[in-house]
Length: 391
Ligand code: AMP
Image 1: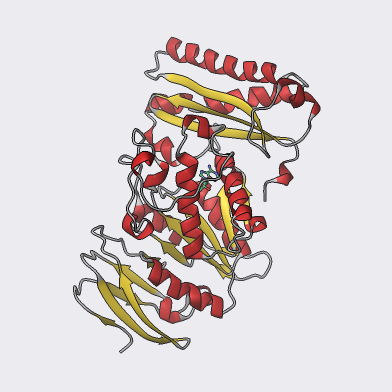
Image 2: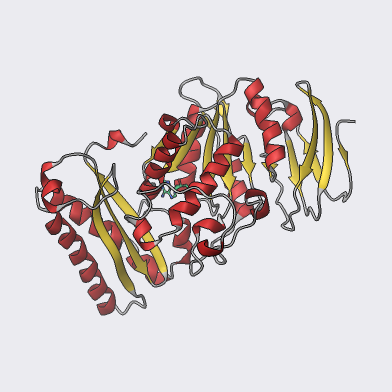
């Protein structure tokens, strides 16, 4: 007998006949819960490993999937050890779920360039301030898994057909053994802060956001041990800050150069940056949501025409003002409010000085945030040699 399950017995294990992406078939199973308390189950021997696995308490029902789902660090690590032994490279795409084509573009990049691809789905409480939308953040796990199952590419470099290899869906207690509250002043335990880089741009509006992100990504890197990791330009400050963190913490999984930043995927109809939070938009809100992108494009045009930084930002705010006036004329039921449009140095994240901006042709992040009703949309354009950071 390959596997023994101790109580409760409601764990459903589907062995599959073939091994996905050359991972030993012992690890190819689908778990279906509910898993009510600690369950232990043994998998006798694979690649000389004798594994006893413990699955953390989880009251959430896991949907079935043809992709192996891991909910505990211990389970995932056993799988990862086998991948190490088999000499496989592992690409990693961390997400908070509610997957869309933007996430999938990262998954496809990973599939193209790695033997195995792992996606994590975890809504990280530590990156939400107490007043933010943790409780209402969209959670669509069955749909996410279905979308991942549909992904299949034939690698251009080696001709191998690849699909996502594993999904890591931990519980909050698995990721935060010391517990986690959203109020930073009350938090206990270990946190990561990338000093000097988390208070500008997005950090100005969300002062504890990057601390939460850096902490969870460090934990995820420690668990997943990716050869390469993939992040979106959509959250450019986050991606660049994490690259810096990998360098500062001397991480090997991934090496800083193996943290890749992939261009923002957009709605083909109006170029709205795809985002899980777009789901919050009302019909009228969706009609005007592309305002931020249009504002940034106006600033970009001004920049390429050689205008000053002030003129670029004025061009962007003018677009927003016109759109607000137009929405009101059209009788749309929507409230738009510009949070910020700014130009920052891509190295330091500091606001560009007016004069420096025109002389220095280093990489510039033109970014902004716009409230459409209560939904805060963000977007950015990189000005200068984008190859310094993308890819
Ligand atoms: P999230 O689930 O929002 O935390 O995003 C997970 C990853 O997907 C992050 O690296 C994001 O930057 C990336 N991402 C989100 N939206 C897009 C998009 N429209 N295009 C490319 N990457 C994206």
